[in-house]
Image 1 (tube, rainbow, N blue to C red):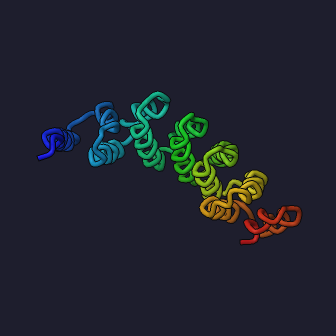
Image 2: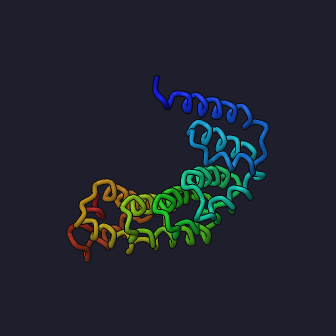
Length: 212
């Protein structure tokens, strides 16, 4: 019998106890479970937070803003806020600042979640789009890809120059996922006329993205 077996049994019991308690917990207590080592517990707590609606907004906003906080907890909080924001569009405002977070994975999830803000006001979408456009120069290719896709989802037309520049720069890395994301960003945010006009002065890598 492995020496770790007793620890695994104890951890399993703790997880089951946590899962049983989730329906009775307050939002702040549920937010604390988003840092649990067991993914089942984290997901169950996240779903419960979403089910509780706006009562969960305050502890979730506090958690995502805590840069020194647990990474997984912050990511689950972003996902939960993104779900709540569909019914309360102002909650996307708590996600947008995370585009400048120190953690690349937090930036990735924030960029991806902002793509769900399609029903936000034009002014709000423009603000989110501007934050996403800056991420097209991020050191992380995953962040860039998420930002490009969300620019398309938000139909953010002013993102054209940044998308074309990202396509040109990707010629060196040749990352196929990023290339596809840029194409999605371009097709979702620009008209055919705008794409044709942009292709006239673009380099080869950018032209390929613009005409796909």
